[in-house]
Image (cartoon, rainbow, N blue to C red; front, side, top):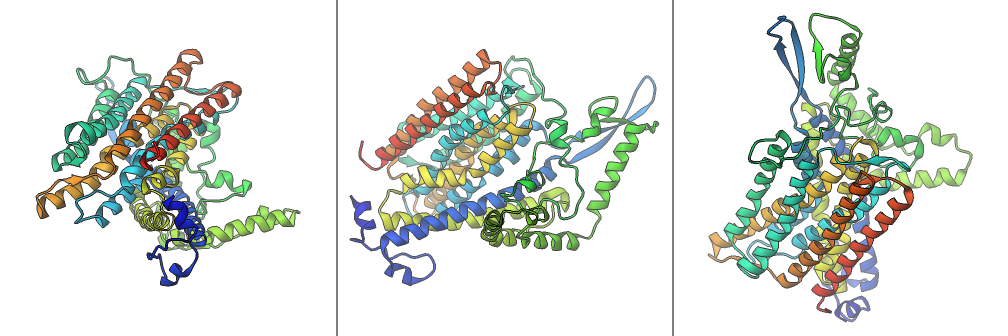
Length: 534
């Protein structure tokens, strides 16, 4: 009733975003404007996510050369050793990066809440809601992405089980500290232990990947293929054009190949031509070596090119509203629609053109710059959400479970969809979901609570209290129950179809509808509980 009264104008919210004159507008119109701004921010998150993926690809594909001498023949070979382990890259760069909008939002909410004995509601609510969005809608998308009849399964089931175990434990742990250990209160030690468990997840997953004795499950290592991306998909990536791929969000179909970002192709296509995976003979100069040297020369030329020229091209691409092929269209209305869409995206594209080119420092500069932009957008999203809650009277947890969780989880959806489309296995598509859920708790909730509990402990000698902890705990129970139903279906598909993703389109779409139903159950029950209706 409070929310309805606010929207009908019976109550006035005195807070505003930019101008005080906003308070003179009707509550219904203000609500519409703030939701419109929220949607535009989510569009910006999509744009910067594409740049973030390109920078992450540059970071992950970095290799180092190791010279190995054969003891019997004395022949030297150069081993191209990956700097990043596949499993660690999934949990850190991929899962942490795609969860950064939620982490930023929760951290900003905690910093704004410094000095209060009560934790903010946006951060935990968003992260629990994001976990549900990751597990249900993203699985629903990934299961139908492969072509009809195509099956994609998890190749290293042991690593996935470890990641799944830590993902489930994260939410059990959160329930324990909210309801069992110290009800409705978070202590400094509980927050610290929450963050430290992220390190334990990394250690355990790496131990499972390397099959360390006593620390790994006794399961045979399936082994991911050297080529994560099929040749027909990977061939689209090798284009050394200076301005290629800077316009990230394009609805125009002719630019689809140019702008699809693939963070999973760590290996060169030509590596399999060498005597072993990632090897080349030093004394010999066969066709494979010449081909490799040619590719290396092209990459070196691009890396040594004028950075300012690359940066200028980014701005030129950001201001381009119509491609050459689009100009050839005979349908004037279609052209106008595409130009209008590009015009709508132009401010974001122009802003993100300030992100440095990806060839600087193996992509690290662009990687960090992208995270800074993501944090800025997350701050605006936090302000808009506060205003929507103030104007409408809707419980902040309800907004966090729905609009915020869906919008900030968009990078997770994009990453898993790309992996499900273009990888030969389902490892990264599903690992991104389970690992992102772990990161949401251990880092996304752990770090903000650590900031607030440390401040309260030093300033007041008091712990951090959680308002509406019962509602959050109820959401955790609903999430845990529905997630069991989700994992059970994945296991059933593995036993019957031999794979978690793809298969006959009818069964894929039925599975997708089932996952979406589970998500709706979570959202409805959680929203009713935190609103005091049930």
